Length: 353
Image 1 (cartoon, one colour):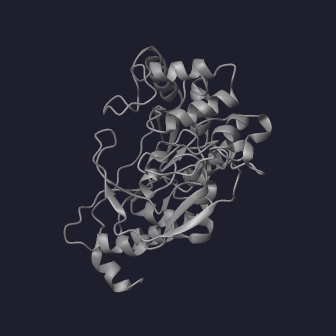
Image 2 (tube, helix red, strand yellow):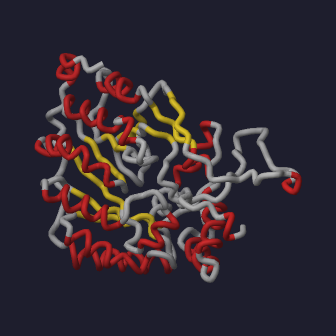
Image 3 (cartoon, helix red, strand yellow):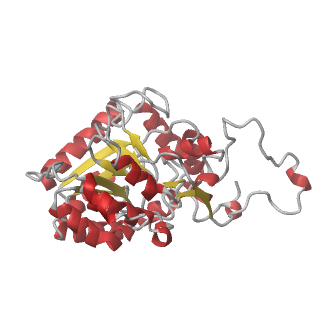
C-alpha cells in the first residue's frame, strides 16, 4: 500500500472476506475504476435488537461470571483486537467493517432487567463488556452503559468494567454508589505509554495520560482499579512493562494483570499487514516473537496458555511483569465483591421501563 493510501485513524487497513458469506463485493478490475474502492468512510451506527444480552463466561482462563456487550464492533479500532472475528457472525468483515459499522443494542437495558428477574439467575459479576469497549465514543450519545449501571445499582448486582476510554469518569457518581456496597471493580487497559505507537495501533482510544488520570480519579474515590497491561506484543511494547506498572501504581491502582497478544482468525493477517506498514524494519521480528509465544503460530486457542503464552519470550515477559508488580504494587490487593445485597424486588418496584 502506498503512503498516500494509508487510512489514518483506522487500525485495520482493509476488509478481509467474511468466512461465513458465500458472496462478496470485490474490485475485480481496479484499473477500470474512476475512484478507488477503498476509502475511509465515516462510521455507521446500526440499530440492533438482540433476543438476549447476558452471556455466561465458561472459559477456564477467565473464571466465573457473565459478559454484557451493549455494542458490537468498536470505534477504537485497535488492530490487535480479538473481538474482530465476532463481527463476521453479524455479516460484516473483521477488518474495517469492525470499526466502521457499529451495532448499537438499543434494548440492552430491558433485556438485562428481564435476565436479573429470572428465577434461575445466579449472582456473579457481570463484565462490561468483555468483547467490545462499553465506553467507546458512541456511548457519550447513547448512554446504554450508564443505563445498565443504573439498573445494576438498583438491583445491587456486582459488575466488573474494562475500558480504555476516559468517558468512564462521566459515571463516577454511579461507580461511587456501587463501590459503597462493594459491587464494582474497574479495569483500565494501558497498552503503551508511547503516544506515537498508541496512535498507530489503537487510533481512536484515549491517550495513556488520560487513562492514568482515570486511574487516579477512580482510586482517589476509593474505587478498586486494576490496570491491564494488555496485550503485550513482544518486540513492540514489552519493554514498557515496568514503567506502565510504576505509573499505574503512582496513580493509585491496587492491582495489575497482563496478557500476551494472540492473533486468531482474521486478526492475524490484519495485524501482519498493519505491522509491515507501520514498522517495516522490524515487522518480521515482531511476528516471529509473537509466534514463538504460541507454539510457532500467530493464533492460539489453547486454554491455559493462550493468554500468557509459552516459550522463552513468554517466560521473559512473565518474569519482567512479576518483578515489576512486586516492586511497585507489593502489599496491594483488590477488595472482594459483596454478593449479599442483590434484590430483585427493588427493580420491580422502580419500574424503570
